[in-house]
Length: 246
Image (cartoon, rainbow, N blue to C red; front, side, top):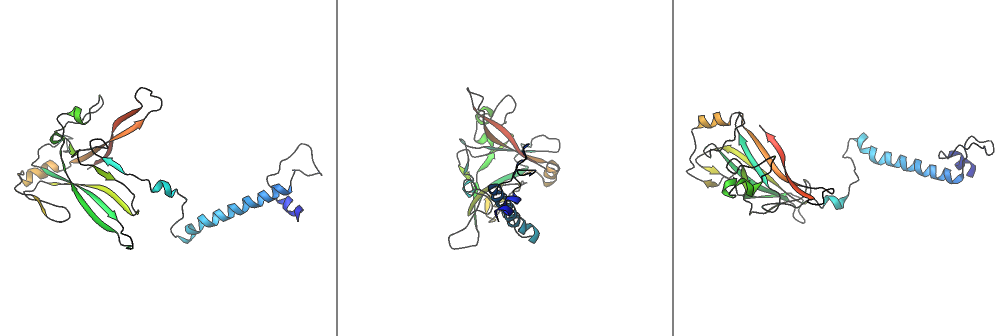
């Protein structure tokens, strides 16, 4: 029996000095280890391959501890900031408030204990031209490479703290939704239909259509990087373009 196990040993070495006229030196211990490795390989192939062949949902090994630590990411004056601008077809920022409206909502999806049905609620967030909240570009974000003109960009109220946390499928997840629409005399809530503001002054629909035809939205977000090689100022904040949408 031991000789059979020994013959399985594929981890054996090939010595220059032959022992018992064998091309490779095989041992019982090496044979046992070889059998264990082979069994582990077969088991792993069956475990991870069965869903692939059965076309079912695949299994994956992940760290549950890391997944549960997604967020919260805080948006606000002392946290992450978002800057949004709308440009026309000629890439000129549209600053006239009579052309479009912008609304923002914090979307919240969650499960209640004992109920397997997902629940939904939302919170309307204050968003407006950055010059409503900041006096100058230096108060927002201003570097040699890039600056945020307050009258051209939209910002969230920096004194409103918003936490984004979770991931889709977790028991509690929050994310932002931003809506851009043509200026209308009466602005309604996107979800409830309630009146947000009335008697808004807007340009003629034809003029608005011309301005917004081919318009694009650019979203920028502040990000932070730690440079371990920089002893003087290791933590730097920079602006990252999150998206460009036509």
